[in-house]
Length: 341
Ligand code: ADP
Ligand code: MG
Image 1: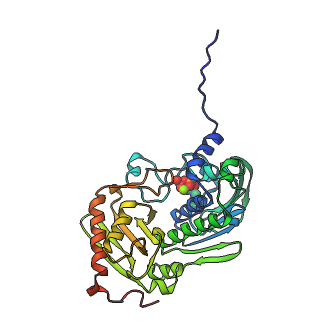
Image 2: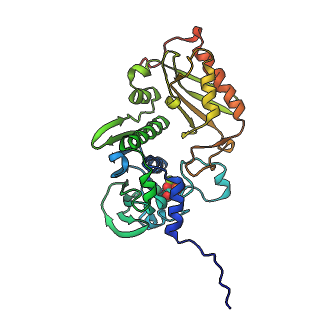
């Protein structure tokens, strides 16, 4: 009798689909990954177009570095990245991506068309569906990348079934676009849904104007600039006057070294900075940008990279709370914010 082992390696496509299950929860996750790639490619302009909450189409157009013709197929292979090379790099990540998972994951659960051109090279177009290359050809395109995703989750029916309504998916995309725009004020973003423009930023590096483009000029006028630092952390941003609040914490954005993250402790530090000035169940608007040595943060905690581990988090929380408390103390409420709006 021959004993044959039961264990075998998964095919690439299956492995990519499994990764997709973690990285791509919903259309907004695809938008996030694609826009982050465009940001990492040093684009100065990024246009995002979606149809039917991203289910019919997601398109991201950038004017970044583009992908060399010889690298295009590799970009869709799992664990292929241009962003890190050695273990040392992993501990001081400066790019938004580094896991080399997004493109293969997306291509394994949708139909992707990528058109790209790197500096001084002919452009390349490639079409992949369910992980299989359908077509690859030369194309003419100015430097940059256009990626179009259609039929998202066509081969993962359960994922498709559990998506929320088109409105809810669109709201999630809109939310992530807002956070990405707040995190990258030097990039001009446009975002449209079914042909209707929902967001347009100038990309001139001005956070006040970006806040105004997203939350409206009247709200932006009620936000105050603040900044502070200690030996390890530099913090800056805008917080709302105690009178400008909402019933959810969704209007608080925390950015670490340009990456939008979610962190319960730091969000609470912002809220605690208001002391008793907020009514129960009401939360401020805030954009808090933190810069720190990349050695103090581990972003490799979850595939979506929104959850991070920060050393000296308590110290950082205290700095945030103290700085906001000082800024909104009555004697400091000089309305100097947003005077140039
Ligand atoms: P990661 O971002 O973790 O490196 P991805 O799967 O998202 O992995 O992308 C793989 C590679 O494809 C990137 O490392 C980058 O070299 C290239 N790439 C993807 N999108 C773009 C883009 N918009 N512009 C230039 N290069 C890109
Ligand atoms: Mg990426």
